[in-house]
Length: 403
Image 1 (cartoon, helix red, strand yellow):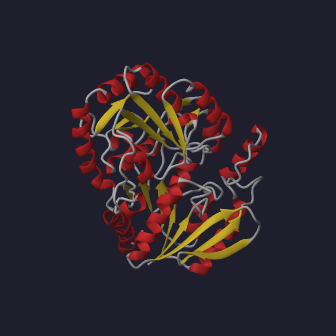
Image 2: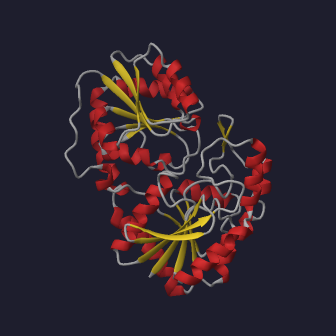
């Protein structure tokens, strides 16, 4: 079977976690004997074909006001025009049509529609090719893909998001199947009228490859066995709740404790965090590989303020046997069994996080017990074979029933 994967970016350097997962999927499907092709956008005009790891990659010049991989700040008016074009971008469809007719895939798996827009569903459908949409984020509900604005998660679509996505629920019925990377993200879309006539609606949690995490190598020895270390790893942006964590850490009564923060963000935001952390036992480590970070901390905190569709940082921490304190947001509660492999808290109540930090940070026996359970519970998020089989099963159902 030949599978065409449609995404915004072809390189995780330009994108992020979704692209890492995409390449895990491509490599897994290739190992299972399936042919894969990737079509993504680029910042140069025209259509280019390259290869990476033996996988054909088509790169199409984005026909919009700017390429979304360019992280240079844009003004509000320019962003608004970009999103208006991206609501239904007919100017990208000839690229897609050329690749479909050249590659003749058996199925198209759509990962990131930003840049391609929902018009791509109609283009693929016109060629009689089944479409599997994977929901990695909130893009179909919110142009920013986060449903997070002005420091708060959006409980419903704002007027601008509703207008930019007004036809999308009906257009989504062109799909053959939809996969949510969590029950939360699928249900959120269904509640807003998406995929009502779609034959296959499945939840397949994303996974991380043990080898990619370095779990098949000897675990680094902790530098110093003394003191409690609380860890955060991820992008340093307001939606990740770093400031909430720092505030709770300052007020929790935890003698000899340090807060280790790994990751990068915009320079001005990082500077404000560092200023806020002055004269406190908070260490900023920059980017770190998972296998270099997790063994050095005792507790991992995932204080997300936005509705994270899944949050693979949780899976990584569990895999290294670390208890996780995480917010009740998005798909995160699908990974944490409260009181068993970690603790859940309500991020709108900072005192909840403070209490969780004190409870777990002051009880070593609880940390040891939860750490052992965490390691066991990580198995579902490390089983790449089962994950790949889930997608193959969907492709086979589409082929068998001619959906």
